[in-house]
Length: 150
Image 1 (cartoon, helix red, strand yellow):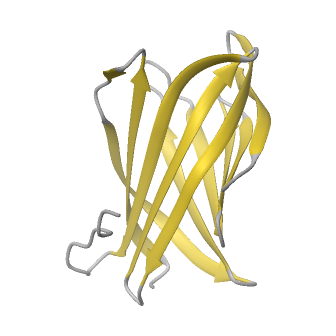
Image 2 (tube, rainbow, N blue to C red):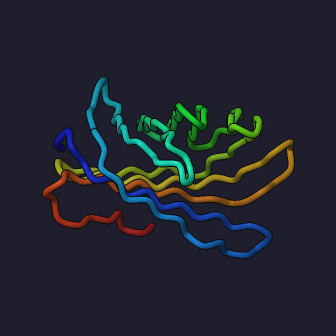
Image 3 (cartoon, one colour):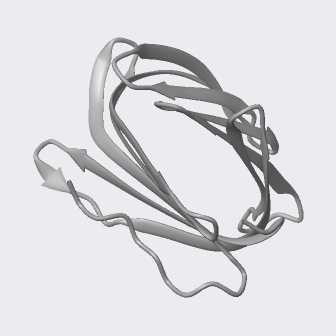
């Protein structure tokens, strides 16, 4: 895969049996691979602010780590079959969250990478939502690619 990539991140939360609206972000970013791990870097604009959030995704066998720096600060770990805790720091205060990851599925080729992560989210030991994240990465000149549903 080339260093310059196009990243599409889709997220969905299921709360109280109701499907929320999917959220999708498409952005340019940078990719590299080191020691068998995939790394993605991109900046996220914050509505109503001049500040931005620097994002780093570290993708490994059965895991995703998301690090945010800037207006929002956090380090979230999603590892299949494991429950993890994190502190999500915002300008309005800190939120303690837990994630129980049930699925981490990665498919890749020379020009594409598609990652799907499914997890449940809790705050203060109270269930909030079942969630899924899909990260699709492609070299800037590649044609479309999506992981086959399983």
